[in-house]
Length: 407
Image (cartoon, rainbow, N blue to C red; front, side):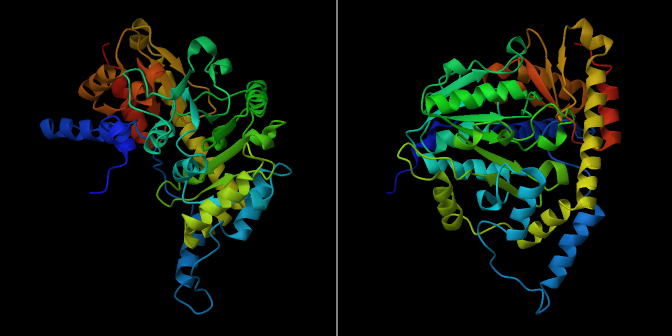
């Protein structure tokens, strides 16, 4: 018989978000009248803008005509969309041949693993989006969970004590560094000085940064970088992954992109860009033409306005959640609340409590679903992530319930 990929047996029992969903289902099974509100998974909730939706609808209808029909497109993506992304987001920092269109940042992160293989050393922010570590485990770049994290992974604690920026000296030479800003789950945004130190470290120590900028559109502080390529030296040490999911509401539409500079080389001097082009043309057949039509519309004047308004809506939700968690009952329990106003998540620490314990308490007493911080890594223990993605009335109702919670 064919042997199983041992990476799957090294994974812990379940991925974080399915486990959250399982507990929600079990609670509803025993409390069928409970009206559950989710402040958990980072799934957008507001409708697409008419402008962006119409562009996709018109394209889809055009497929029924001889003039409008299209089959396979370029695996690297629609050239007009690639050019538009380069102009709007990376003016002077990256060109269209360095931009690859995909079906989302998460999918790109998984495919990127194929560039480096199973012997690559891995370093990740802790806490961090689970796919960085889980994807590394599947390809064999990390071993079994030893209770406080997976073997072969260097965890970089990002906590209030270090202003959510890691001690870079812990990273081994020639490592792949996963870094997300604005961060999921903490919401922290790295400063220009912090990212410069990261880039300088990577170049000096032969590392490559996988920079996840999926929440870039939430940054409202103009002094904070929205892309790693704002940082001098980044073109020789970084790959960026990004997405339309959060700013345009494309979580279900599926459209993202990656930026791989031509200056980026492997240790033997070969081009990372060329190998990524091979991955995208061999293991991927291109993003949906319909979705790409929506992406083009999202980047014109009206589309950019629509995306900003949607992100502003979620940021206002975040402020409402933050204010609730700073209420009297939470203050008495010494709950620490972190929300920058530049990301969609509110990160809260419940001292001397386990994350899943707090998750169960809030679910049972408030009928509100959250996300336990421990699911994002060892340094997430005792924290809870509250998501600002939700209908305003649901967020307000959830906060009304949370305000009455006895801790």
